[in-house]
Length: 354
Image 1 (cartoon, rainbow, N blue to C red):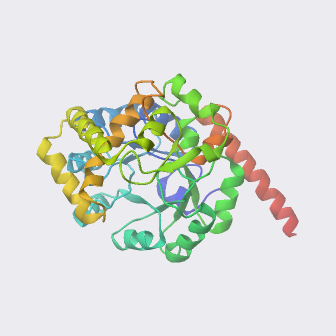
Image 2 (cartoon, rainbow, N blue to C red; image 1 turned 45 degrees about the vertical axis):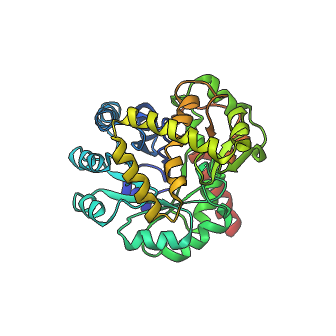
């Protein structure tokens, strides 16, 4: 009943995608998602190339199911990631900024499914023109970098724009079977969830940080802010975000430069390559050079909370859906509950239609 164009293309059991959250979508979470019948993406935008290869191999040890890798074209090791994906037979890649015609051609020649995430119909159209096989579209309720158009308005627009060409996956505010059925009613071929998988037993996020997510009972407290990297990003309000919201431009830039150097050390990138990436982002994405430099701010500040376990000293990227989730299920229990509820709702709807 839940087989769609997406499940056929990705080779997964259910039309449910676990997104590639930086510092969160590690081999254990990806394998847990895939073994439960979903399709998991491994985060590849925040780690060095040698660790990325190690993580790909680890996922393959933990599951025989297909999975994907996420990256973006501006990271210094993007070419290495593409080579690894092809070499290890990874099923799909996801990205928010197009890796460019050359990379896309190489991936598609190897049979890798290209699955970008977009926030507007015009971006979806462009992504398909560049070779996307699937398009994930995230509404404003979604976590991390996000737009301002609500999911209920955005998904149908994108489906009208490209749904006859490629499968469209709905993201932003999904957590259960009712959401899956709603997305399918719009014409989506599945749903993608980040925050809901972040809040599972397999999540690598330290418990003291996860508790901040569980304790958040008001979706209105999960705000969109430009304070961290100059771009709109949805996060749970906490001590550091409150401080950043009050900081002046100079202080933010100093923080960004300091964290940029830390990110350079972490990934092994050269200072010149970071500057080149920032300049390329400035040219391609219609953002200021200062915003591009500040983008290096995000990974290291997120790491404080999501890896080091200091939720007051880092930031907490999150979709608004965290405000209505009160328990940490296993990936298996989560997927099974979504499927059971979706099938029950579809059965009720079918009965009403007769």
